[in-house]
Image (cartoon, rainbow, N blue to C red; front, side, top):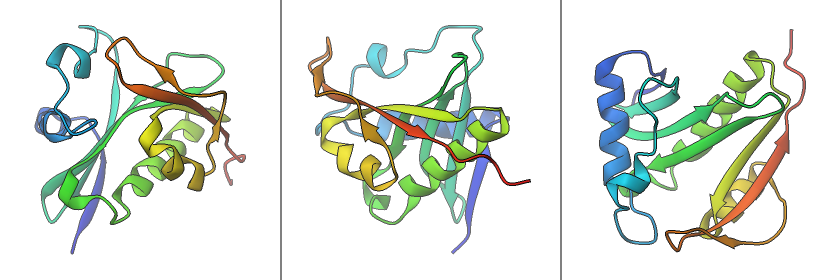
Length: 150
């Protein structure tokens, strides 16, 4: 089994990112395209893509537009690959990339159903659940990153 993690820089990789995001379900249903694909044209976005044996299995988006923290967004692992460590690998690689860019804090707005996963990775909830306009319940989490080893 070969696992590759890419910092997306090629169109084919971005196509796989969008394929995963369309296949991934939120609360048992595929979200509306307008909600899931909230990128603004001509703005810089950063993605990670995981492949297993050449098949795309997971992705996340990183938002480096804030000065005090990096934000991990749109964490998605295809259903048949969940529970195999791909989500953890995505978060670890996203944290590493954030550290390389000089960030010491990472935030994730988690689905309330996934909060336990993020807590296991060291993320601390900041307040209770908030119901978004689309009816999805989320919890804001934060994690302080240790200084990168030299």
